[in-house]
Image 1 (spheres, protein in one colour):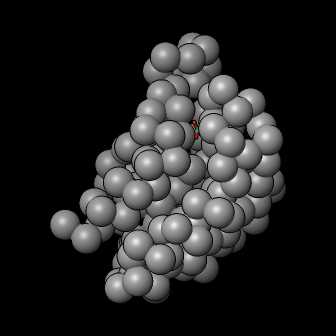
Image 2 (tube, helix red, strand yellow):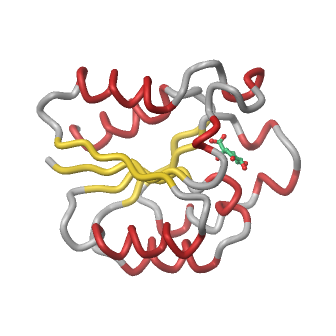
Amino acid sequence: MKLIIVNGPNLNLLGKREPEVYGNTTFEDYFTKLQFKYKQVQLEYFQSNIEGEIINKIQEVGYQYDGIILNAAAYTHTSIGIGDVVKAVEAPVVEVHISNTFKREDFRHQSFISAGAKGVILGFGLQSYDLAIQSFLG
Ligand code: DQA
């Protein structure tokens, strides 16, 4: 099973970015724990602050990998391009968010990703990624 976590803008700042919303752990530390926990999964991680790079990565892996775990961060609410590529590729995409976006500002209630996603997991902190992996393992 080959899965990739794709993180969008500002998620490279996890651990120091609004810790009251996103927690104190860096994504690199959390990712190491996930790799340890799911040794049977070939788990990769990609992060970019650039919309086109996220689209390129999803195109690149989207016909080869078994699944994509996507936190498009702020682009979730703005990017038709990322929404389109999620619909285009063969690999199922699980949309994740660390925070419960429905408890936050109205502009975070809209997602251009969800309509093309296999499912959506949000509001469980970093555990949202763990739950997304479990969804692929069945
Ligand atoms: C986020 C929620 C988005 O609204 C926000 O722009 C982010 C992170 C989350 O994981 O909770 O950057 O996707």
